[in-house]
Length: 625
Image (cartoon, rainbow, N blue to C red; front, side, top):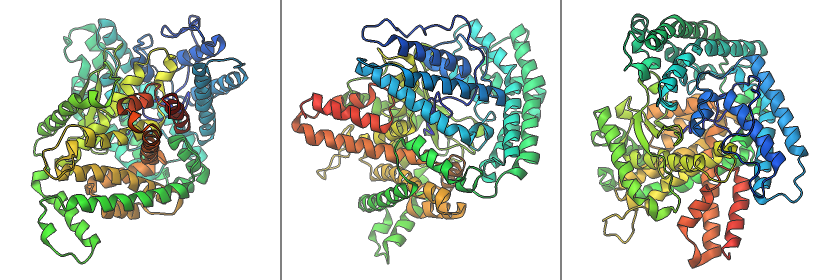
C-alpha cells in the first residue's frame, strides 16, 4: 500500500489529508507558541498565517502524539495516546470550524506565493474535514484494515527508543491502552444507536485480531505480548519492566478480551449485511464525498467507472504482448479465445512452484535484493534524495492474515526512526516472485519511502506542510514509481527494447498485473458502492481480469467494502502524473529533464491534484515551455 499507511493512513484531518488517527484535543498548554521549526519572522512570511498554522500544528501534535510526533521528531507528548472519546471528537470539530473561519478571514493582499499556497492548502484541508464530519467515521473505528486491534500493538515500531525517558513514556502509553479501547467501544455504541455501522464482512477478522492480544500464553506471560516487544531487554526486576508487565496483564489483556467479546456478541450482529456505502444510513452522498476526499478531483462515480473500464482494456492488450515473450508452454497452443488463453496463463502463474518461496526469510531477502538494485539507480532519475534510510520488515503475524501484500511505515530523521517497507510473509503460496519488483518500487523507492521521507525533510516550509497525505498524490506517485522500473538499469535481452528492471517477462507481467489491479479498483469500488455489485461479483471480476492470487483478491475486495473510495485514488493519481509528464515533454522537447521534473513533483510535499497541476504548469513556463 501502501494502504499508505504511509502511513499516511487517511483519517480525519486537520484536516482530512493528515495521516493521523481520529482523535481529539486536550486544552493547549500555555507554552503552545510557535513550533521550533516554524519561523513567523522569516522574510516574506505572513505573521498571522504562520501563527494560525503554529496553533493548528501544536494542537495536532498534542491530539495525535503517536502519529505526528515521530514524523516531526517531536517527543514532548510521547507519554500519552490520542483521546478518541465522543466528547473529544466534538471538541476537535469545533476547533476545526474556528480555524477555518480564521483562515478564510486572513487578509492575504500582497502575500507571497508560498503563503498563498499554505493558506489555500489549510483551507482545503479544513473544508474537507468539515464536509466529512457529518459522516461520523469515528463511530466506525474497527475493520479488517485498522483499529486499536491492529495499530496499537504495532505502535512501538513507530516511536523512538533512544533514551531511558522513551522507555518510560512508552510504558505510560501502555497504561492508557485500555482507555483508548474503551473510547472505541463508546464510539461504536454511538454508531449503533445512530444506525451507522460498517458491513459485517469488513469487521469479522477484527475479532481474531483482538483476541490475538489476549491469548492464554500472553495472560500467563505478559512479556510475550507484542506490546512488550521493545522492552524485552529490560531486567524483570526493573521497576519499569514490572509496570509494563502489569499494564499488559491487568489492563491490556482484559481490554482486548472485552473488545473481542463486544465485536463478536454485540457489534457483528448489528453490522450491515449489505456492502455498499450507498445502502448505509449516510447514503450515496457518503460515497461522493469519499471520491472527492481520496481523488481530490470532482469526478462522479460513473466517470471513475468508465476510466476504469478503459484502463482495463488497455492494460489487458499489453498483457498479451508480454505473455508472448514468456516461456509459458501455452504459447504453443492455439486458443479458442483470448479469455481462455488469459485464464490458463493466470492458472499457470498461480500454481507453478518456481514463482513462490518456501521460506519467509527468503521472501524478505528477495525484497531486500531488489531494493539494493533500485537504490543504485535513483540518482539517474532524481536530483533530490532523502537522508532517511529504510528497511524491510515482515507484517506482524497477528494481523498478517487480513492485511494486504505490503504497506509502508514512515520514519523520521529527528526521531531516529527509519522508514519500513512492511511485507506480508504469511501464506507464501499467495506471494508470487513476479510481483516483487513492482511492489518494492511502490513501497520503498522511488515510491512511498522516497516521496514521504522527502516531504518530512522539506526545508523552508511550515512543519504542518510536511504532514500532508492526499491519497491521490501519495498513492498515485507510488503507482507511477512502479513504472519507473522500465527506466532503471539495462536489460541484456537482444530485442532492441530496454525494459530496465523488467527484463524478465514475468516481472514485466507482474508490473502490468499491479497496474491492472489498480484499474480494476476503479471498476470494482464504484461497482460495489453505486451499482449494486455483490461481494462475489467483485471477486469474480478481479479474478477474471488480473493475476492476483485468490486470497489477495478476497482481501482486496473486503478492503474496498470497508474503505469506500480510497482505492480509486491510485490510478487517478498515476494518470494525472503521467499526463503532466507528457505535457512537460511536449512543451520542453529536448529541454525536458526527467530528474528536474520528478523533483518538481515532490519538492513541496503531497498536494491535491489540481494544485499539483497548477504548480507543474508554472514549472513548465519557468523553463521556457
